[in-house]
Amino acid sequence: MNLDGSVQEPEKKECSPVCVGKEDNIKKSGRMTAVVHDREVVIFYHKGEYHAMDIRCYHSGGPLHLGEIEDFDGRPCIVCPWHKYKITLATGEGLYQSINPKDPSAKPKWSSKGIKQRIHTVTVDDGNIYVTLSNEPFKCDSDFFATGDFKVIKSPF
Ligand code: FES
Image (cartoon, rainbow, N blue to C red; front, side, top):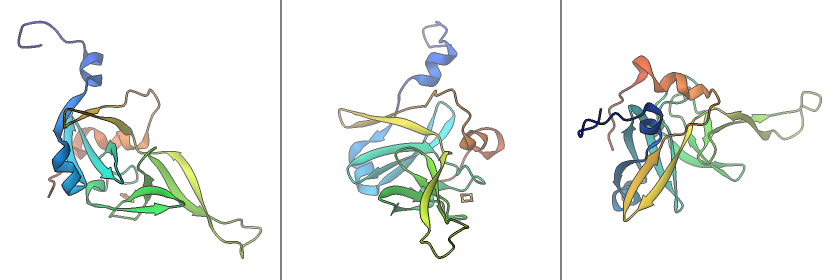
């Protein structure tokens, strides 16, 4: 219920943008964490672009806000600090290197497992950063770690 006594529809609340901080601050640190409508997210500022995603890695719930950003196949990725999975910042795809078993001498090439990490929308208004949660209806692997016992990570940022 809102302060004025009106009832807010659940879908509306889930999708409304939430202010998570100041542009100046994230530009200095390169990343920040936030809770948006009871969902923990990490926001990265990388090469002039903002990216937000679920904070817990889709593989086993690793803390992505503590990972390094590296380019793989020309795509900026967060590398999970636990088992080094690579997740594209722009799309949340899991990347891996594959080889052709019929040609083991061939150079491994980067391939996509598809979207594994849920990506959220970042907007900037008057120096403030807003995150709008994704309401894409597909089941994303990172959803599992965005609920229940896996919530609440203490962040050094
Ligand atoms: Fe992220 Fe395993 S938990 S790679």
